[in-house]
Length: 438
Image (cartoon, rainbow, N blue to C red; front, side, top):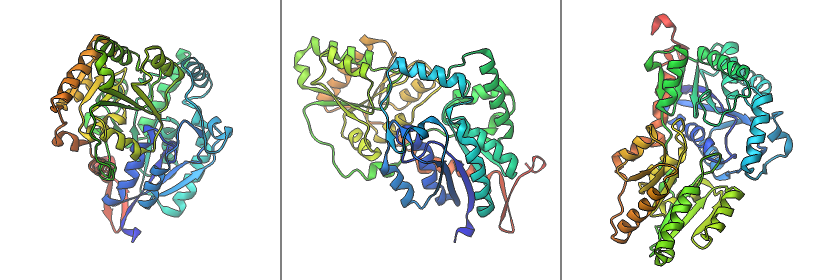
């Protein structure tokens, strides 16, 4: 039966049971590719020390019949302890670790996985005869593995930028030499790639401008998305409450902070004490100590509930049980996958964002109030505006025609089209189209 499928090798360091939003895109692609005639094999690592694990995602992958091959790796998170949850570091510790890692590991700390991954992939190819390699980043090491395999195996390579490389807002280059090496490596990967996929228009523009290696149409934008099955599987109906429930799902780090939203919430409640019994805030995800201390300082302990990291579908349940969702991003080079899951719930959104693509996308949803990240007064007004509509039972809903654009099943179909564009059919073999054949 599998003889009728084309075969793709997916290189993905981050993959279930590792949790957090970074694994969602790759996991959902792997889940749905078979519906479009592509049989995926995922090459990843054995679970090690990480911030969160989600066995429900792993179960989805297993139920979809996706083959997952795991190897050992010499990077620190694998050497510390197997399947071990570690706490989110303080901002000072995070910066210190980042300085050390970005100084001594190029392109990232996962580079020590490359040798083992390449050897394992070559052995797998001898058994499976893959038609295509799909590498997703971060970490950028995945791209280097993909480029090496392209050279060794002579089959097409498609690379997927979940985040920018050189323009990643939290990437630190200790010296000009470090930046030069990263740029050289990125150029090398781009030259090896047959097609490039990005999640964000700004990333595409950066690649085109910096390297000039591709025509505009040779870089595809496939945005992040949501899985409608996650929403359909939620059996619990929304609870009726006199309180307006505002929920944030995700992780805070660097300047992506709840500080200004919490200050605004505190001001709103001080101005009208009755609202203390009318508004509830839920934080889903790992919270830094500094953020927990801020909640205490602002006397919001009875207003803000911290649920910690939850399995993915349990998180979706809470989103659907909310009245308003809060989203925060401090740059225009990222659009976290969580935003698209917000779109899938069709709930109204308070968005703390900078000017740019993400703000325009949110405004296009017709159900978002966008506020500058540090505008406390603007956050106060957004909270009060949605509360007024909540009281009137007139909260806006995201139009279905907008949200369905980000359906994971549809987006996987777009990915399959990219894969198929590099193939042609000849006696049940799939061969890369040469430059003269395009």
